[in-house]
Length: 179
Image 1: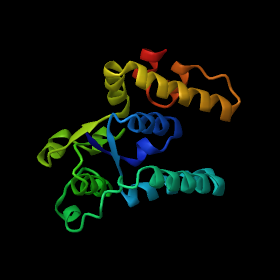
Image 2: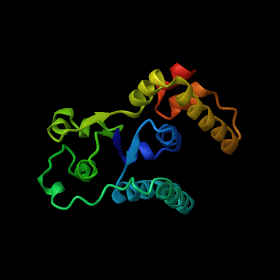
Image 3: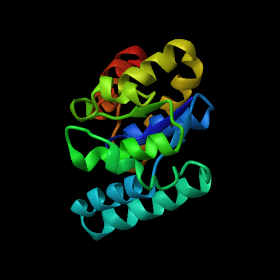
Image 4: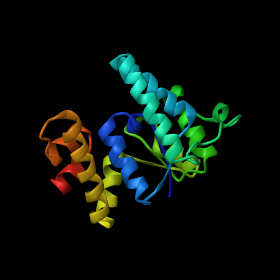
């Protein structure tokens, strides 16, 4: 399954790490566009120059890990599309150009299911999708989440527990399952 990942899933860190950890395990093929990656870097600039630099380095690592994940520019497609927020049309255009099966986004209101269905796409939220993956592959998803938890503890110096960490990362359903 090919899933185009929206900026609001790539940034914040914990959500991104769990989602991409599941992708590394082969449960889906991630896609994004150069514009989506650039939006992530711009959002990280709000943390200051260090945030932007960190985002750019993480983006470079992503591009090395998944060289085929970039959806090609969708010339002409974006102009014919309609979404409630015109600034999100590029996401839909990239999903179409990349032959995605779905768009993973935390922004449900701006990606109406009926409009996506007209393009042969579905909308999935990260928490619901990860919970579904956990139901089918509990050891795999649990292992990814444990790795993310250990990294969060090491980098923050805090004794995070799984459920609060995932709840803070807007993955409460998965957090309850792994709790």
